[in-house]
Image (cartoon, rainbow, N blue to C red):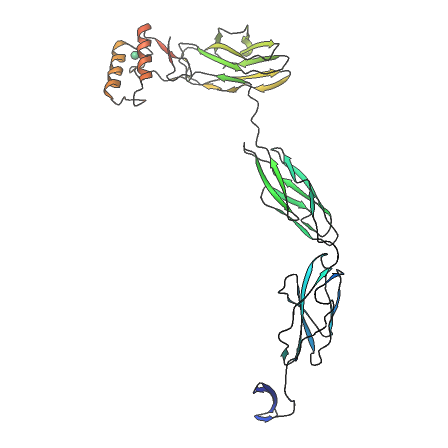
Length: 394
Ligand SMILES: [Ca+2]
């Protein structure tokens, strides 16, 4: 068998028959000796069509040409052709400067030092407008759209900068178009905003937070109750402004009684409801009554009510539950009577900074003073108010 090899010696390639070098058969192998010198479009020219036909003078010893092309002055290799002509695969952007270079090559290598040329396409550079530039959404969210206005062959993209806005249509385009998006519901009280970037421009989406329900009537209950005394309940109606009328209705816990109803409120025993109004103004009022727990009650009492303002109903906010209160900390035998020994011991403990079993510690002057007041007027007391301390003489 006869083997031929093609190998390099002294920067030239030679055919070899086994190890016999046959010099002079192929001659020297050199890459193209020069670069093209007359490009079309001419270097630095402008008003070039966006689909240019590009060409250059053929280089004799080239077998093909590497095409470098881009919109920076350091164009990248994009194609290789055999003939001295090339067209861009896509339409070029208007009003844009492009850079290109042609490097001839053959089996021995490529020409070096080939120039980078440039030309500028005709037309105005791409200008983008979006409309609107902001939008507002309620807490429930919703869908929106943004119109993009530009010239044909002007590319753009739409990008959401937040997970709570999803672009649902028109994520990109190359002419005028529309972006659609969806805003998720918002579950927090604070409002929020985020930007969509569309064609390099900013569209801001605002979304309101969760609206608290209206609270024009606020119930105030004592911090606790004891079953031997009634407790004062207040429905504080704020100023309602320019309204024609309002009424209020309150439901008491089952088995509880009622007395001292303010503002001529009417009690309906069958349903444990008290009703006030109509008041033919929007003036603020403190509607009140005394609720009377059943004897020996230990259950938590639950209250509910509604305020109806010009036919619109809202729930009375504020306190809704009251549980049996704890005796005054000075009432060490828990009989809801503060006798002299108990008050004296409590006062001494406060003066000496003693830790009081059952707390609160340190003993507050308010608790000491209240204990003295209760003892002075007859020892019996109850949890009656939302004050601190909540104890009042019974
Ligand atoms: Ca006692």
